[in-house]
Image (cartoon, rainbow, N blue to C red; front, side, top):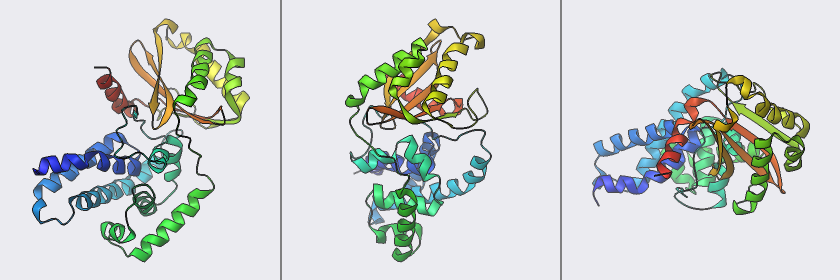
Length: 300
């Protein structure tokens, strides 16, 4: 098999690793491209396992980026959320609960609480099912150290790990009610679909209007959502120019909101027990370019 075809055969899996490591689709694309340049400069015929070699390159590049990004994220304006990605096309290399759960925005935010090394070991072992010996070789450490990092990461995540329910279709009626209530600015209808302890996070990155702190509780979140609808005209947004489309983002239902055809925000919805338990809104324009490209490609 030509080396370019061999690389392409692993590309989706490499992107899946890089995206979960970095929380940025655009950075993950850069890492995968860099891995290709390094791979093409090597001698693939002499490699025992091209997949292991490529995964090693990607993981180490991600570790370097994560370490340099931590300081920048500490200074981030408002809540930080990962770049959303469209998952309607089932582009994951495999389909499993572990893979699906690990790409949700809630879980990826939780991964931010781990050290870069803990994050790498946890993802490679728990999500991508690599053996400890292989992980040790990738990270240049001992299998015993890998086991210790994995145990530490899993213990840290255990109590806060969100429950994941795979059926998108089962969630659509509830999402439809949310969209209608949001479009109408109907506070009572919004309250009927939100959990008592619903959380609300809005990522504007200091570049667009967004809540600077998380908001919790049904009444508080309803007030914010109704306020968004009510204040739109005063911000120069004509309601007739606003369109909403329901898609699957990061393995959860999401609302893509456009103003005059331009993407404005993505509302990712976490749902448990027929209630919306979390609303994560990405408005930072830098974080919307990748998914906007995905959506436009899907439309053609």
